[in-house]
Image (cartoon, rainbow, N blue to C red; front, side):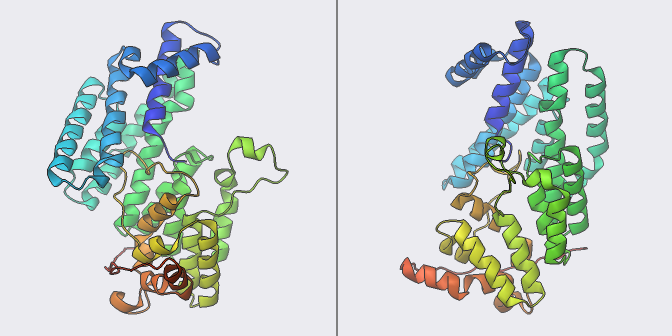
Length: 359
């Protein structure tokens, strides 16, 4: 599951409370529960330092930009909230110049193009890495060490995740794969789900289905189910997600193995409920500026998000994009059409487009 800004804000403020009250060991359930209750009532009562306030502003801005604005029909209201979020992020940067999430997100909102944003992420990556190393080296007490092991490294993982996803959009597929691989090397359990971007990039680079399987084996930790589920299984294995299945489908389609592509499509439709309309409309969803948008695993929302991120694959075809793209093949496939008919749906127009790349 992708990074949740509100949960992370609560964890940061809880850790700072433990520090102020000299609570040790850190696994003090009573204090943690008290902090969680206080946060739900009013987060402001836990905010003491500028760094606390700075990240809280990031969480507030994220809630608006990633989770509210995409669903607002009133353009004026959407613009008002966007400007407000920009002011919040600027204040976050002023309060804590080391808040790399705020700095990155402010650029994401103001960049003139996707390429400009990618260039920024490349140019300042080494500065962030130096800050990360300084933070690790300066961790002298249990609270700083706990922060450095998890919460403190998350902005770096989000930076790499953003670089990977936006490089994919820019058609820089090798850069996308490299950034995702670096993210997985830094955090093999993959809390930011960089593996999804890596599989889409591999498919764009014309990897075989066996090479996709090799990638999953090489990063097995990222594909393990959550810990409670692992304990109940002798050989834990997470079912393939929408990104993996779309990547496999695209690889089969590229190889002209339409029977294999159909098998992947059938598996996708069995894995997710109510798939026909998302597979037909293939709506594009705005990229999250904090991280990949937080959705329920296995939900229809997850399928919609994966399809949106897979746009570079879906718009690839054997002929003119208007009539031979993978998007059209999926939307007009009998499996999708039959389910649509059973829902008595009234399909609308397909989206079309072109997608370049430097491979």
